[in-house]
Structures are given as C-alpha cells and as structure tokens.
Length: 347
Ligand SMILES: [Zn+2]
Image 1: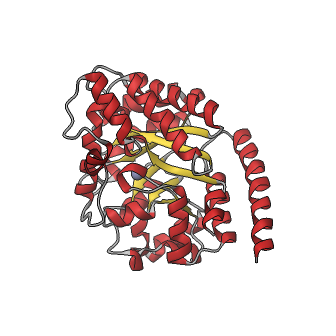
Image 2: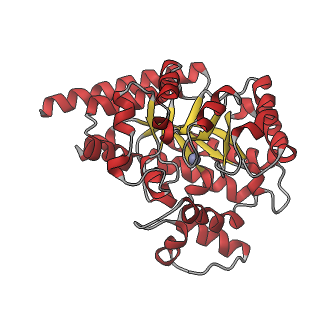
C-alpha cells in the first residue's frame, strides 16, 4: 500500500509558499544576505520552522511563518522557493499544484505586489519545465490588511492572470476580521472574472463560510472544518458542489478540531460533500501529499478507489485553464488506471 500511495498521481490545491521553505534553503538565503539565524545546521533550524507534536494553537503554528518571512523579501529568494516547492511536489507524484502566497507580506525591501507575484511565477515556471508538474498561483489578500493594501494586490493578480495566476484568496485572522469587511476587495476580483477561494471555517464559525460564498463569491473554501456546526449550510454547500480544501495534518496542529477522532473528513465525504485533501504547509506541518493520503487510508479507511476519486475530484476543482485541466485529467486517468490494474492484480 505504501508504494501505491507514493505512486498515486496527486493534486495539491492548498499549498502555501512560505510553508514550504526547506531549512537548507533558509540557511543559504541567510548566508547570502548576511542575515543572522539562531542556528547554523538544518537539524537545529528545523524546530524554528516546524511545529512539534504538541502544537497547541494556531498562534504557535503561525509563528513559524514569521520566522522565514524576513528572508523572502527579494525576487531571487521568492523564485527559488517557488521552484523548490514544485520539486518537492513532484517528488510526491503531484501532477498539479496550486501554490499560494500573500504578496503584501513580501514588500519590506521594496518589491511591489506585481514584482513579488512575477518572481514567484518565474520560479513556478522553472519548476514546471524541470519537473513536469503543472503549477498555478493563487494570490492571497490578508484579513488584517485593509482595501488600500488588498485592492492593489487583486489588481496585480489580475494583471498577471495569463502568466499563471489562477485565483485569489483571503487568509489570516478569521475570528477578528469577518468576510463582510472584504466586500469591496473581492468585488474587484469578481468584476475581473478571476476565481476566488477563501479560508473560512477553520478558526471561526460556519457563518464565515456562508459569507465567503454569498458575499465574496468564493467557489472553493479553504478548510471549511466547522461546516458541521450548521447542517442547513452544510446541505447548501453540498448542493452547490463547492469543494472544501481540507488539510488534515495542519487542521489538527492548529486545533481546528480537538483530535483525529473528531476530524470530519470521513463524515463530510460520506455526506456527499466535495472534499479535497491538501498539505497546507509541508515544512511547517512536517507533511507531504503522500503522508496526507496515508492518513486518510489508515485513520479514516479511505480505499484506493476512494483516494483516486479524491485526487480526480481535486483536478476537476482546479483553477487552471480548461484545456490544461483536460490534459491533466487525461494523464491522470491513464496513470491512475494503470495503478488500479496493478492493485487488483496484487489482491
Ligand atoms: Zn491555508
């Protein structure tokens, strides 16, 4: 089964650039820039970048991003980390990834939102060429930023749409900044016709999920864990076939649920919700797509056929251009078909 999980062609729709930085890369970026780090080996640096088993809150989790951000303030660093994100995903047999980042968090040294987006796109393109993974970018607006920051970010995303920006997103402190504050920002995105996904129902209640869809125009939801608190909304999301970008390991670590027994992915799947499984932050969470699939298999009894269906569903939910999606689906069906034949032979 382990080899099968590794070989399964995959799609990761929820993957943060600043959650993917390798310790070895951070050491090199720091050395090149004369930036002091509190450790000088990968092993000693990792605890600053990755939560441990007893991560007790979203706050502890988010501190890991603050640690790497000072070194992701120039174009060379951004494009390097983007390329390496593609390489790491390729190593887990991802056919397709959507990498996301918030340009406004990378402007301390003078980059504009457009500069930061262009740098990440360049790295993703290098990665696509080198590793054969299709990579698209989701540009994030932050909940603690106002329209004065977020609207230019949306404009920059829209301007680079034909270069690989596939969608826009909203992330950050969900409890303090409800979706309604961002109507104007996302009206700009809707008018431009760029797809929208919103982090909602992770650290705040289900009303945020409803607002993300109804008020902001989200067609996918990041996490959506707390949907079960509102059965009527759950049915509404199911009927609309709105995909949930669930990130099991991360959701446990940030305490979006108490523990694995309480994690609703099997219940959501069985209830007919459109579930996808994603990594969120491979370095911060110490995970990858194969491990997430393994968790679904071992903890929640997902069969090979079900996991294959989840990955195909993720490709169908992708924000990539329709002809690219068609090619990806054809390739997926060929690879997955071959794999399922091997599995049934082993039985
Ligand atoms: Zn996220």
